[in-house]
Image 1: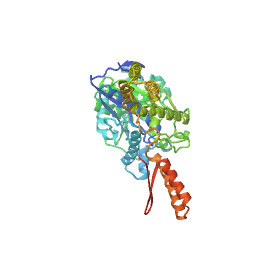
Image 2: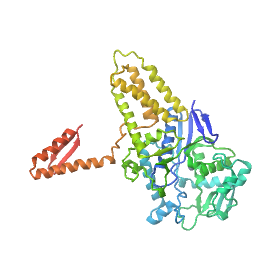
Image 3: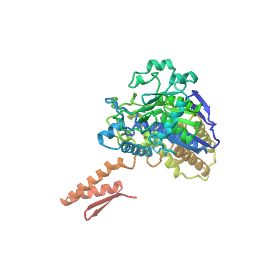
Length: 494
Ligand code: ZN
């Protein structure tokens, strides 16, 4: 039995999919085009593990993760202009060129974190017609109104018939006292009303025709529309970061109830947030670190580079509903822990059975496997899985050191646990753990080149002692050095 904490009921519930063998899951994808920053990593990794585990349990999962490319999210603090539009205007690019640029970077970072691609990755900009149709139905149902070319959701009217605020636990009076006076407020009947369609101002370069104006859809609308288009209504799981509960997911609920007359989502799941050295991430705090900067160590806050797998492992060492605080100390701890785990995994590959083993380890090994499943079934408790895997590492090390004897069946059972939980479900890549194997190796390669240039110079100066010293020491470390007509070649000995 799989238990999932449902943010809507605020308790763990038994997972009962709508269809016996398939699951529909929608997760809010990157909501700002920044630079693939750390904040993107946590929801991606959290729901990657949910996706992997449901698949492992035999469900056919359709996983939809959207791309918010209409660009109404990141308004420039100074001009209030949409971020994608501004970058496009300043650099004379097509807005979609800007979108593609950031999307490529995001995908690359996700790949390095071993986050599996979703089944469908729909773009908001590719679903304008569907969003317009969705608005028409909400208007027909009487839960929206047109005002000066824009269309707003009528929160007060909706709240008379339904419960606006049931996900976030906010009530409408509270909302009134916290809603700031913003641009466009005069068009609204009620300050908490939100835009379904916005008339584009002249400087807004991403806009589409609609029955109401040349404009663009409100942000919350794309997820209601695309979730229903690809998963039907209702569907099983809707996920995202906790920061999206209000207003984004609250508005999604209101829209789909207004549109369909019922809730569209059975299980709302939210991952908790990431802090850096105890502080919220933010550009103004100077701790806004991109994933690429983590991978290369090129940020003043970072003492070193951290391999993508260290970031992934660190995030999974916490339960997804708990906070994660990034600090150099904590990441270095995760790097060591991952190193220990992978040492165990590598030793396991070459373990040999003992002829006189009595099979008494099997009960312990089986109980570790059982606990891994119990942990995953208890709302995806990855830290408990990792703790159980470390216990298995202890057994591997004892066998490896000759302190314990194991049968072939016991060794196979250990391998099955690691392959299932560490590799398949937690998605840890065994061979790229602490060094990244790509750009992170560049400085070391350059250093070898530098040594060989010094050797060439020594040879030219007939300084044979230095020349031989460099060649012999590199050979001892494990480098094959060949002199060529144009200089030298080197490789690592196989
Ligand atoms: Zn969304």
